[in-house]
Image (cartoon, rainbow, N blue to C red; front, side, top):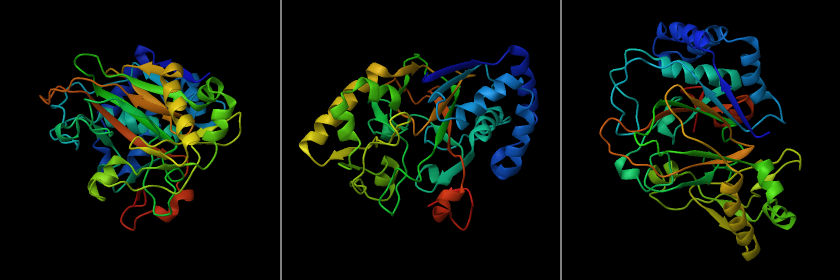
Length: 329
């Protein structure tokens, strides 16, 4: 099974919402906030908690979980137009939901070249990024990809997040924003064995994330060292693909990459997020994408919040910044 669906009972949603409405802006002390969210999420029934925790802990767990009937903020300001946090928030239920789910999977991390190192990412359409292969886009299909991070060691698939959480504050007004997830297990079953073998060879270079190439590299490609796109045991394959471009090193590698891209939609699960819903995404077991959608930039556009999550911060300690132990260069 690659997809899981989980719905909170109404009394549980109400109890959790009441607790989260009393808590302040978590960004001032995230460690304290995460502790409080652990306490708040203890109102979930044991079997519900275990489903979420098992999603993060087991190799054979689904790669995608859709969590529904979550509490929401009663009043929201307009959707921010610049991709940054919104001003004028009186409650922080959305952040509580986001970080509470995050804490059940691992530890939130920030990256200096992604949303200025913030732990809570506001994912909204931005006019100047409408056609970009980034979270600012809306006018183009955001290709199937992993969320990767630029790394000076030349590998963009090592320090990247293990998980993402996407929490919906405001859905697309036309209901036309679809998130897709293609699990590597399903892809490897669907593709010919020779194609999978090529994808497992170090015949590809990943382009750095769009946020890095835009803000640091003046739009130029910054390619990784040659890497495979698929790795790991046949039973539990891992996949890493850059949204901002993959450069195949041989003609055969390009043919395999084309076959991979053509297969993604065929095996993908599709979710249209609405307020009160979140997606838990395993960033190693599969790749995700997003459809085009209409953006009016009028304060009512689609608004998600996102976290990057590592199961453990120890293995990426070489990237920690002196200023903040959760924020990486």
